[in-house]
Amino acid sequence: MDDKVLDGGPWTGCAVLFLQSLCPDVNLLTLYKDQQGKFIFFKVIKLTLIDSAGGLAGYEIIKVHDADPFLGVEVKFMDLAACQHFLECYSSGAMRQSISQHACRLLALAQEFTVETQLKAGTQILDRCLDKLELCLQHIHLSQPERLRDEEIDQLEQQLEREVHWPASQQNSLIQEVPRNCFKFQNKVFEDRMLMTEDVQSFANGVGRHWKHVGRTLGRECRALQDTAIDNLAYEYAREGLYEQAYQLLRCFMQAEGRAAKLSRLVKALEDCKLTGLAETILGVQLRD
Image 1 (cartoon, rainbow, N blue to C red):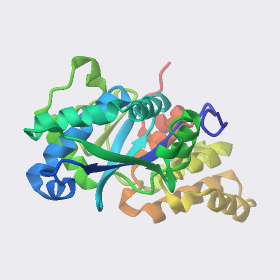
Image 2: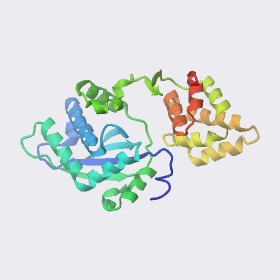
Image 3: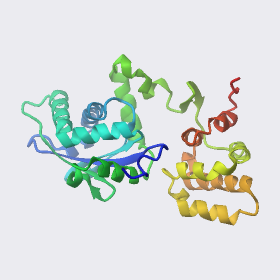
Image 4: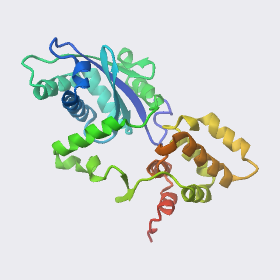
């Protein structure tokens, strides 16, 4: 497999699952536009992904959208094994069987529910190369999400968590353990907020030569921090040194992301770059002996 997939670093990628009902009595686009129908079919999608990706962890639904005649489900993968498991289930037909079973039960259908599917990563139609697992993983890895999770998906997730009691073996993966406006770091819960000048200063003081690595990690979900932009910052502020380069990196992130430039995103990027000590400093965590 290409080194871009197995490079030892954090693995993420994005795929869009397109669904079209072949059952005359069920139109997924119409169903999803109805508030109650939307929640029921979201539950169908969620349960299908749990079956197909091997549990609750390693992925998240980012958006569900109208792609007439299909309903598009955009999924971000944060774990290579979960993505591989999903692809194997999709390729074998197990995913379609799972969605059929959950839809029949939750929609109380009198007939079998069948669905047409298509899987894409960027412009690549993965159905054409399902026999080449490594190539599919590569396409998904190269297709990074261009957005954060929709607020509508957040609301549906919370509604689902209130109604469903997941198996005890999966409790550690539940979002409900952490309030919506908080995030978890080293098993402690911190209130999330927009980045402030003090955070930028602490980051610039401590990140040193690793600022580019952090920038590229943030760049997976921030189009303003692509490789060219990071190289331009390095060139423009070369004379001022590492502090100023790192400082300008976060300022660029904050200007581009606005209210979405959250502390949790910086801490997650630092974790991914193995810079947990700096994350502790920014959060004011008591350093361990």
